[in-house]
Image (cartoon, rainbow, N blue to C red; front, side):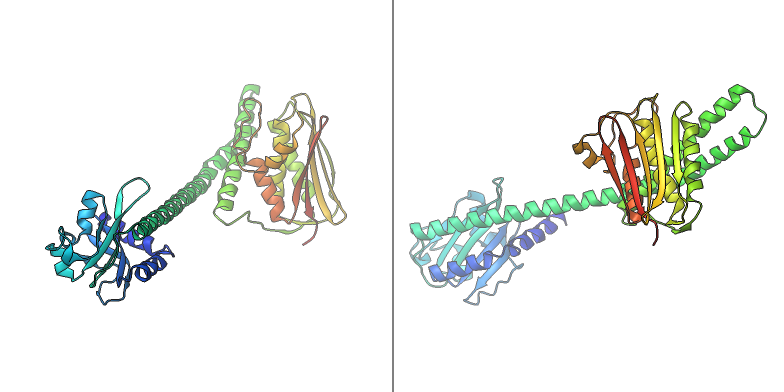
Length: 394
């Protein structure tokens, strides 16, 4: 079955080479012979791949001759071509069974070798009348055409291999991203249950040590929920769904922003986060996505700035735009790295204990883009500032 599939693929490859019919036509015109073909020859089969038949020989592409009845079988074994001007006058082939069986008096067939040296088949021509074939011009023409066919055959097979590899990689990528999405979905429930349990515990009378442990668990689940959200959004985007939004006129966006800052302040208790919030007008957004975007941007600022430094958050509605910026001191981001910041899995050098997947900024930018906005980055020796700019109204 596999060999049959390979043979069919070889036939298709020859037929996909647009110059082959022209080659066969030129051979017939130049030599005066009435039948020319490209044949696939194996140790078991002789199959016509492409044919020009002006003498009603009756053989069509895809049809076979019994291997042992062909001279091409002998060419495959010897690796050398055969040229016969006049069968009746040829000492070697005058009594050969093949000319007698197929009724030809002139014959020429040269081997076609793949680039790796393996035998593919032959370029051959026959006619019931004698012909002058055994001369330098005709032989060189056939050699040129066999080389040309071998070259195109290699190109076709190379493209086919590349397409197959690309298809397999695409399928693997889709399965991988689907697995990520399912895994993220399945992780949400137990993480949510752990966080809910911690919240209940913190309402109880606990000693200081227990409170610290509860805070550690809460902080860890907060980070894990952020990672899961980023993973699922990444997988969703790669699977063609993009970032899904549920937008509405939100007049409580400032409270949402403050809640995100408070959550991150709990996680980064040793850091100072300064907020200047002036979101006085309603904004047409998905507030949960804005919260996710801010969490990613603010978490990034806290991760990449000095431990003793302050991070500043400023949010405004002005000029028909909602703007929220996160600024921090730290190492300058080069223009080359700024271009790469919003690509998935791009990470810098973060402090121990705060490593991520490198998806936060990518997801943040996708959320801004889904809202019809963007994220601008300005970085110098004194400060790095990320600013999300989103239309205030639909």
